[in-house]
Length: 196
Image 1 (cartoon, helix red, strand yellow):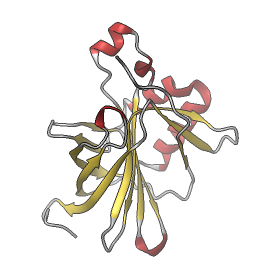
Image 2 (cartoon, one colour):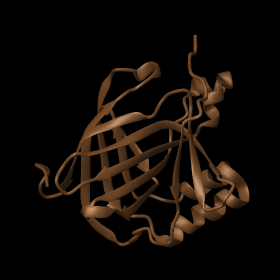
Image 3 (tube, helix red, strand yellow):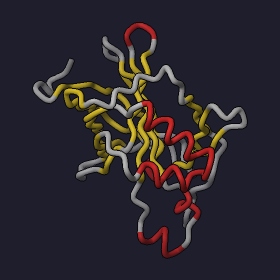
Image 4 (cartoon, rainbow, N blue to C red):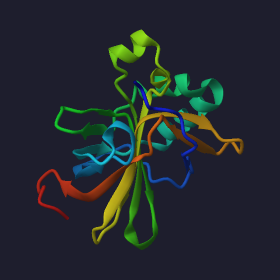
């Protein structure tokens, strides 16, 4: 029996021109931590989490995603994402999948907010059975990196996006579960994975 259902939890984020978006390759960074499931099948369970950042998405890429959502909705966003590669996201112990867009926005006190969008792997069962979850083709993570620790975030493993009425923000809708919590996040360089 499938207990997943759509809930009213939405996360808003602006694709603002002030977003830090260097497309140049940066020193590879590893962000590691733990995922804690809040509800659904993962409720109360933990898994390892890793985000490998090869580069931040450029302003042009961010504008392309916003234009794609305005013109063709989520399907057009998926097409635009398929040509992007900013890093890799791994949930659990597998090899992970491509993190198509990583948008970094400076925050107060030296913190950085990372918004990660990726095309999730839709299972064969979802496609064959025509489940509603097959319409949630994206994954979304929102990470707050703080220079003195206490970095955390949220993860929506099955999401869909739409443009809000004001036209300047995206609404990210979760499928059937509360967003998972990302805890104990630490950023490491490629040369030193022991911590900041």
